[in-house]
Amino acid sequence: MDEAAVADLIESELPDATAEVTTPRDPDDDKHYAVTVVSPAFEGETLVDQHQLVHDALGEHLTRDIHAIELETYTPDEYGG
Image (tube, rainbow, N blue to C red; front, side, top):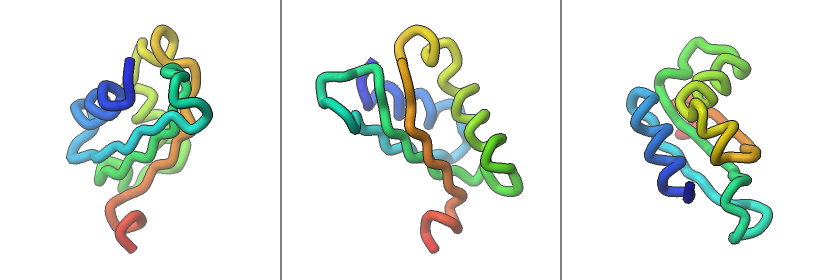
C-alpha cells in the first residue's frame, strides 16, 4: 500500500477530509507512514476520538498493510488558523 492509497482510503471514508501521507523514516518503508488529516468530522471530537475515526477509516489495513502511523488530526479551523 503506497502513500496515495492510504490518503485515498482516508479521504473516501471521512467526510470532506484531506489527507497528506508521507514515509518519514525511509522512503522504501511502505508500512510506516506519517499522516496529517484535516476534516470537519473532527469538530467537537476529542483527540482520541479523532484518531479513532482515522483508524476506523483504515480498518483492516492497519493490521495487514500498515505497520505504524504517526497521526496528526485537525479541524479545518485549526489547520487554517
